[in-house]
Length: 530
Image 1 (tube, rainbow, N blue to C red):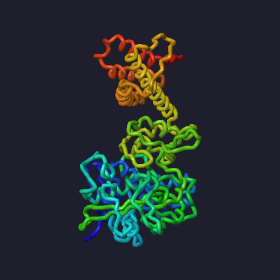
Image 2 (tube, one colour):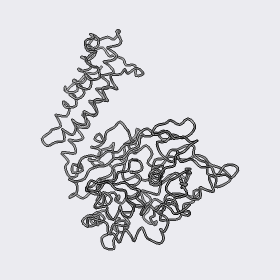
Image 3 (cartoon, rainbow, N blue to C red):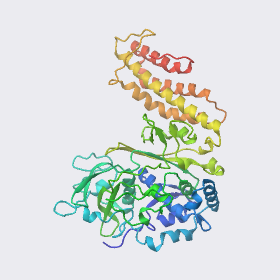
Image 4 (cartoon, one colour):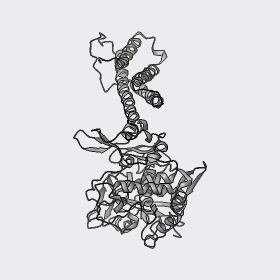
């Protein structure tokens, strides 16, 4: 193998500049030009969500006001002092190039930003070469297809994003391999994995990655400098303030059989909770990755700590859990959970959205990265979405608007539930001649046979409801208008789902009339449902 792939200088992070041009940059250029960059353009959202968690502690190490860095523990223990420090850094408008060089060229980090360094490859464990072997002591790798999310693996793997097979694996460019390395560490599966032999036993199962099946929310500024500074989470009570903070590339490799190091701020909160160990195998010229080892990193119980970029929802048992990613759920439906304070009993907004500079609020959007997965092996869809500048509506700044957004969202959800129910009722009436159509009769649904109208109605409803929602957030709109607006959207969706051709049928006409009345009943003070 000749050379390596130095992530400090290799162009592996796609970005969009404020000029509108696209570019690819390394870590050093990204920080030095952050004030000239408008957005990250990684095409793999789980990799982008992980990269933001990696860039945030780097930003905390680099950003400073004089000699006081943003990761200064003494300042962080007092949130008002820390917020004032962050405001002074934001006013500078850019990262100091000398501070960028000082961090990435530090002698103790030499080689640790190289994707293929033989001793300390970035975010990888070189011990896997010797520990992932079969019974004969021969290398037992996982395959490059296992690394790249979206590629099929195994003999019967489904072909989703290209014709890749384990019998003829296609190498992946080194830059893309870095994206998928990050995605695996943050969103990798649980269950069976490549066995790793450390003691006499070859253990071959692991836990899910810390961000699996979740959605992350970041305050998004007008330029990447602002975004990265705001991505540094404010201090949290759960962390160990006595222990020295470190990211994986800043400390020695952990012993997989020993207790986990304490969770510290901000490095280990964001980069120190991995459950997977990965090692990439490069081509001779280090331009591509031809193979990979992916296995477990630890079997120790994970530390309980609040991720700063997640919404928490109350479970039935009273505890809280991160809101799960849903590929069919648009970002606007989470908006009230991002604007309202944690005074509500069922939801807690991401801590990174607390204590934002008031002067920046009118320009701040919210970026969401999600990966719809199950808890084990199944990956469904990933997504990225960005709101307009909405953080000016946070409850602390504009309580009236924050609660207006909540009322609009509640009306949309309630109407959507009623539309789904009404469309199922309509199908039952249209296809079952034995249904009692008297006004007070209850119609019993068979949930195994919902019929096609419910799905078709909801497919049409939610995109149109989003348009209505943003219309309702314009000046002069009031909460009382929300019910009628979403009811109109639901009625139109129902009509489209049933279709013009079906309405001449007397049974369909009766079904449609009953379903429309169920939706319109939402607008009356007292409602009756079947």
